[in-house]
Image 1 (cartoon, rainbow over the protein chains, first blue to last red):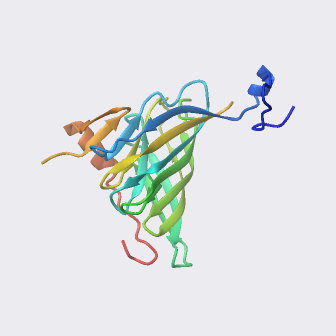
Image 2: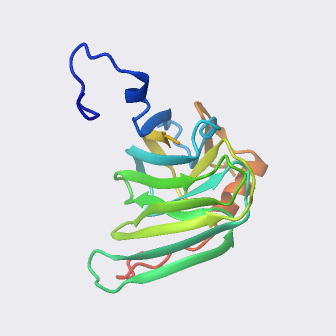
Length: 181
Length: 39
């Protein structure tokens, strides 16, 4: 049997074969264009089906040179963020951090009027443990960086919200994937 | 003053006072300056 994702025409996929697939699309949410929102909440994203998730946002634009932020459920406390970044015209690494903030900052971003993006892994948002955010993908104009963090509130969450730090998002799709347990 | 729009799944509407306060809290942290200080 070929290794996924190569399938043969008419192939019978056994349960064991299907169970070897590692990443499943949980939810796909289109972002509005008119009116363009400043924040987008995605409900029904996390459940007992998966412990860990990949979140992406691509295909849309943002109005300002800003980063995108992310929070869980209605929680507005206990977010810890560390960012390592620099500019495309510099070789000097810089850092920023937030201790017990109101959201995870620097999880995505872009340039004004151009492609916006967000990408991160969330480990355990439904498990009533401190959720880890790994591999956040910061951009603000021509500044790029890697962000990691933690949410020190041991509660279970089913939804999340993405924020433009200022201005609006327009179009594109937020996708939530579950890593098979 | 008009408040920003919030999208919840497929519904888009103006933020309530509570949602706007939450939005301001979530985005209050300063942007890190770029290495070339252009933002």
